[in-house]
Length: 405
Image (tube, rainbow, N blue to C red; front, side, top):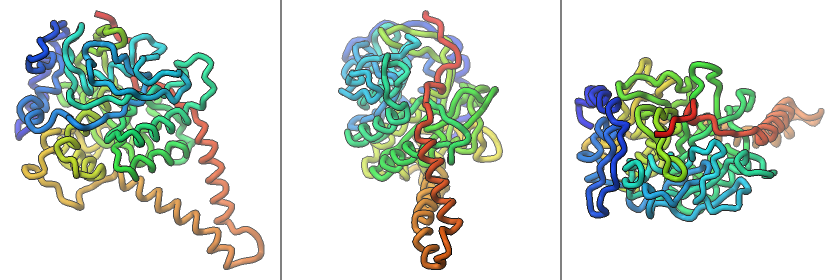
């Protein structure tokens, strides 16, 4: 974005306020033109600095959510056949959102929108493909599938189908669970990381109220995204947690839901996570040999700080800068630059190996009965298994139901 990025973020405030105006569908041959209220295109200088390098072609973004309405013009040709791990008996290409606004559809449009339709909405990575997976059991009447199982199985499906990034714009859980992450999600996070997949999650929208840790954003190895506005200020409701890694736009535009309905007054870290997932798709498309770890490291190292200290609990290392993270020659990042997202994961995996090895070591030292280490390991395992049953729900969504235009 260049040295004027702070001014650029601020300058688009007027544009963001000016344009809740619907546009008509452009001809198929026309250049994609974002809506004026998609202010992040100007802030990130997407059309001049990013799209000439990458529009996401060849990358697949898995969207674990309520499913996606693949019929709307804004998603024409962008949605692959996916899955339904929540018991809905769909292939992911139907939005089952019980709130009737189409949360999964709106996230897909933010990532890979094609313009046209009732909104003219253009995604940040319009040449990427969306792999939709419905994981929301509460939207499936009569489903007896454990919600955490649905999410864990959705992650494995996405990894096995070749997704390079997985978007997780939801949250839930309990602060009493170790690492604020259920055992099943810890396992599937490890599965994704071992297969070089970037996981991106919203941080949550309860920063002004309960502000509790939420999985999957709290899971080690997941990029948790906080929210900012067009003035580069912290969005007031974004969650404040030590695992928040970066920030992205969380307010200022419309969303496009199921049946191509357009809603105003949309805000939330769900959209912020979707934009970061789209950014990861752009970076990986331009740098196909770049590892997931390096992608995340570069996102953090090239981010524009929003608050102090750095990182802070609302916006992490700051607002992402796609062009900086994408261009390794112009914006080099030291190999030893901080990467706390993966450091947390590596530390947890190392601790787990030590716990697993401890009982055998202790057994050789004493024959007078089980050692305290064994008791601790068993107790910890029991808590983790119990945590695997925690209920997940859509919380990292728009804090109030948007108004239709």
